[in-house]
Length: 313
Ligand code: ADP
Ligand code: MG
Image (cartoon, rainbow, N blue to C red; front, side, top):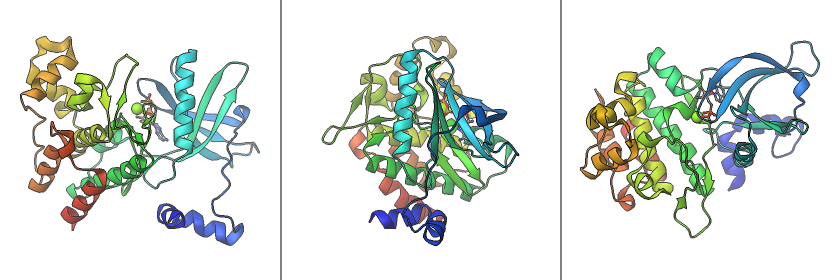
């Protein structure tokens, strides 16, 4: 079963292995030396991290590989632990629709940690969609690929907790991958929830109702956030229709303080994001099911994959 999964997720790399080394998985260099990293350009930043494009060029002849390197924006000890956790999670994952871990770079003297991953040249969906013409069919393909990555993540008992277009990376016009595992948490067998303890600003407009009310994160709350991500994809990440813009419109500008409470109010009254223009009826139904108050009634990613396959046929 494992071999089958690996063949599905990386047929090309497996071929190479059989040809050249005969081992099951390719050797992944896991320690990079900082002095060989040559900066090319900034790629982006989120709440916690800053990602930069480097060329790793130990032979110093410009033949090196391009890698994306994530560091923390603020380097206090507390956050460094979070990045170490993110590295541990990413290291254990192996799927076509999840960004590939390449290694890490630690600088013991300065207590700095760098996460080294594959570079995805088209950036995040949030950068890519507004400036590229993407057909409805491609949108649904991206959505299905996200579900495939998420189904795998859930099979490993991780909840992502930060699924949003800004955290989906684009390899090319027919392949997207889930990136940013900074908020990912492991749910022990038997438990259903992860309760957050940390405060700080959170992506509230993507959160399920139970996350906002009780800080309870579950597999079903990832499905809710997927619904919001699907909405973003179908609106091609247009800023004027973004989830924050639409929720602020619904609640009236006066409510900008206490946002989470105001969103709960709206959701409890069964208000939801509007149906994107030209959204097929079946897709609209599916999105609405992701946003059902009763989490037991939301579909699983496994189920969503089957439904996208049917819709795309
Ligand atoms: P944060 O945890 O701070 O949100 P992310 O991991 O989401 O950081 O990265 C921030 C941004 O950097 C992303 O939205 C994307 O634009 C860019 N980025 C991240 N990883 C890569 C990558 N592997 N290749 C290309 N761009 C990336
Ligand atoms: Mg992010």
